[in-house]
Amino acid sequence: MSKTEKITVSLPSDTIKLADEKYAGLGFASRSELINAAIREYLSRDMMRQFTGELIEMYQKIERSEIKELEHHLSKLSYKIAVELAQIYMLLATAMELPYDVDRSLRGKAVKQVNRLKGFVPISKAVKETEGITGTEEESEDFF
Image (cartoon, rainbow, N blue to C red; front, top):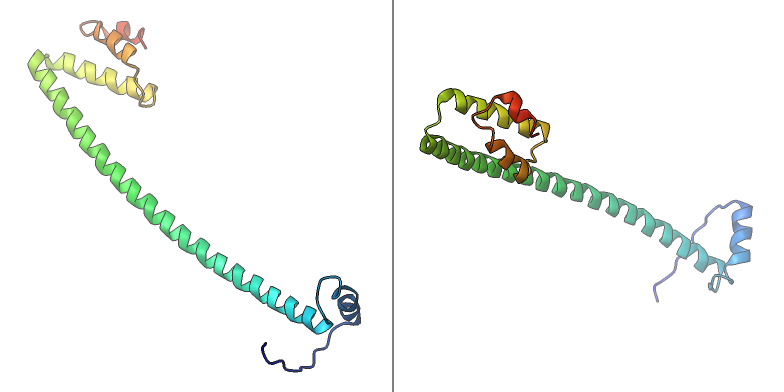
Protein backbone atom coordinates (compact mmCIF):
# COMPACT_ATOMS: atom_id res chain seq x y z
CA MET A 1 0.00 0.00 0.00
CA SER A 2 1.38 3.36 -0.98
CA LYS A 3 1.89 6.12 1.52
CA THR A 4 -0.88 8.69 1.61
CA GLU A 5 -0.49 12.39 2.08
CA LYS A 6 -3.07 14.82 3.30
CA ILE A 7 -3.75 17.84 1.16
CA THR A 8 -6.24 20.62 1.30
CA VAL A 9 -8.56 20.85 -1.67
CA SER A 10 -11.35 23.34 -2.01
CA LEU A 11 -14.40 21.91 -3.78
CA PRO A 12 -17.89 23.26 -4.28
CA SER A 13 -20.32 22.00 -1.65
CA ASP A 14 -22.52 20.28 -4.25
CA THR A 15 -19.49 18.25 -5.47
CA ILE A 16 -18.70 17.17 -1.88
CA LYS A 17 -22.37 16.30 -1.32
CA LEU A 18 -22.40 14.20 -4.52
CA ALA A 19 -19.18 12.41 -3.44
CA ASP A 20 -20.66 11.69 -0.01
CA GLU A 21 -23.85 10.28 -1.57
CA LYS A 22 -22.14 8.11 -4.17
CA TYR A 23 -18.80 6.79 -2.83
CA ALA A 24 -20.22 3.76 -0.99
CA GLY A 25 -22.56 2.87 -3.88
CA LEU A 26 -19.62 2.95 -6.27
CA GLY A 27 -17.61 0.55 -4.08
CA PHE A 28 -15.27 2.99 -2.34
CA ALA A 29 -14.57 2.89 1.39
CA SER A 30 -14.38 6.67 1.72
CA ARG A 31 -14.83 9.97 -0.03
CA SER A 32 -11.03 10.22 -0.25
CA GLU A 33 -10.84 6.93 -2.18
CA LEU A 34 -13.50 8.17 -4.62
CA ILE A 35 -11.66 11.47 -5.19
CA ASN A 36 -8.36 9.61 -5.63
CA ALA A 37 -9.94 7.27 -8.22
CA ALA A 38 -11.62 10.19 -9.99
CA ILE A 39 -8.34 12.10 -10.31
CA ARG A 40 -6.54 8.98 -11.56
CA GLU A 41 -9.33 8.27 -14.07
CA TYR A 42 -9.31 11.82 -15.36
CA LEU A 43 -5.54 11.87 -15.77
CA SER A 44 -5.58 8.41 -17.40
CA ARG A 45 -8.17 9.61 -19.91
CA ASP A 46 -6.12 12.71 -20.63
CA MET A 47 -2.96 10.64 -21.16
CA MET A 48 -4.94 8.24 -23.38
CA ARG A 49 -6.28 11.15 -25.45
CA GLN A 50 -2.76 12.47 -25.86
CA PHE A 51 -1.44 9.01 -26.76
CA THR A 52 -4.33 8.47 -29.20
CA GLY A 53 -3.55 11.80 -30.86
CA GLU A 54 0.08 10.78 -31.26
CA LEU A 55 -0.98 7.41 -32.69
CA ILE A 56 -3.34 9.05 -35.17
CA GLU A 57 -0.58 11.40 -36.30
CA MET A 58 1.80 8.46 -36.71
CA TYR A 59 -0.77 6.41 -38.68
CA GLN A 60 -1.43 9.39 -40.97
CA LYS A 61 2.29 9.72 -41.69
CA ILE A 62 2.53 6.00 -42.43
CA GLU A 63 -0.58 6.11 -44.61
CA ARG A 64 0.74 9.08 -46.60
CA SER A 65 4.12 7.40 -47.14
CA GLU A 66 2.47 4.10 -48.15
CA ILE A 67 0.19 5.89 -50.61
CA LYS A 68 3.16 7.78 -52.04
CA GLU A 69 5.07 4.49 -52.42
CA LEU A 70 2.04 2.85 -54.03
CA GLU A 71 1.61 5.76 -56.46
CA HIS A 72 5.30 5.52 -57.38
CA HIS A 73 5.06 1.76 -57.89
CA LEU A 74 1.91 2.09 -60.03
CA SER A 75 3.54 4.82 -62.09
CA LYS A 76 6.55 2.61 -62.82
CA LEU A 77 4.26 -0.33 -63.63
CA SER A 78 2.15 1.82 -65.98
CA TYR A 79 5.32 2.92 -67.78
CA LYS A 80 6.47 -0.68 -68.20
CA ILE A 81 3.07 -1.71 -69.56
CA ALA A 82 3.06 1.23 -71.99
CA VAL A 83 6.51 0.21 -73.28
CA GLU A 84 5.39 -3.40 -73.78
CA LEU A 85 2.22 -2.33 -75.59
CA ALA A 86 4.16 0.05 -77.82
CA GLN A 87 6.58 -2.73 -78.68
CA ILE A 88 3.72 -5.10 -79.56
CA TYR A 89 2.04 -2.37 -81.60
CA MET A 90 5.22 -1.64 -83.55
CA LEU A 91 5.77 -5.36 -84.20
CA LEU A 92 2.21 -5.81 -85.49
CA ALA A 93 2.34 -2.68 -87.67
CA THR A 94 5.64 -3.85 -89.19
CA ALA A 95 4.44 -7.43 -89.73
CA MET A 96 1.22 -6.25 -91.39
CA GLU A 97 3.02 -3.60 -93.43
CA LEU A 98 0.34 -1.05 -92.58
CA PRO A 99 0.36 2.14 -94.62
CA TYR A 100 0.98 5.28 -92.57
CA ASP A 101 -2.55 6.68 -93.07
CA VAL A 102 -4.19 3.41 -91.89
CA ASP A 103 -1.82 3.32 -88.91
CA ARG A 104 -2.77 6.90 -87.92
CA SER A 105 -6.48 6.15 -88.40
CA LEU A 106 -6.27 3.09 -86.14
CA ARG A 107 -4.37 5.02 -83.49
CA GLY A 108 -7.01 7.77 -83.55
CA LYS A 109 -9.82 5.21 -83.22
CA ALA A 110 -8.03 3.54 -80.32
CA VAL A 111 -7.59 6.83 -78.47
CA LYS A 112 -11.26 7.75 -78.97
CA GLN A 113 -12.39 4.29 -77.88
CA VAL A 114 -10.26 4.22 -74.73
CA ASN A 115 -11.34 7.76 -73.79
CA ARG A 116 -15.02 7.05 -74.39
CA LEU A 117 -14.92 3.76 -72.50
CA LYS A 118 -12.71 5.19 -69.71
CA GLY A 119 -9.95 2.65 -70.33
CA PHE A 120 -12.13 -0.47 -70.49
CA VAL A 121 -12.36 -2.02 -73.95
CA PRO A 122 -14.37 -5.27 -74.03
CA ILE A 123 -12.75 -7.90 -76.24
CA SER A 124 -15.98 -8.41 -78.19
CA LYS A 125 -15.95 -4.76 -79.28
CA ALA A 126 -12.23 -4.88 -80.08
CA VAL A 127 -12.81 -7.92 -82.32
CA LYS A 128 -15.69 -6.16 -84.09
CA GLU A 129 -13.39 -3.18 -84.69
CA THR A 130 -10.93 -5.34 -86.60
CA GLU A 131 -13.66 -6.03 -89.15
CA GLY A 132 -13.60 -2.36 -90.18
CA ILE A 133 -9.83 -1.80 -90.42
CA THR A 134 -9.98 -0.82 -94.07
CA GLY A 135 -13.32 0.96 -93.70
CA THR A 136 -13.90 4.58 -92.86
CA GLU A 137 -13.86 5.92 -89.35
CA GLU A 138 -17.63 6.57 -89.51
CA GLU A 139 -18.30 2.90 -90.32
CA SER A 140 -16.29 1.67 -87.35
CA GLU A 141 -17.97 4.15 -84.99
CA ASP A 142 -21.14 2.02 -85.29
CA PHE A 143 -19.44 -0.76 -83.41
CA PHE A 144 -18.86 1.38 -80.33
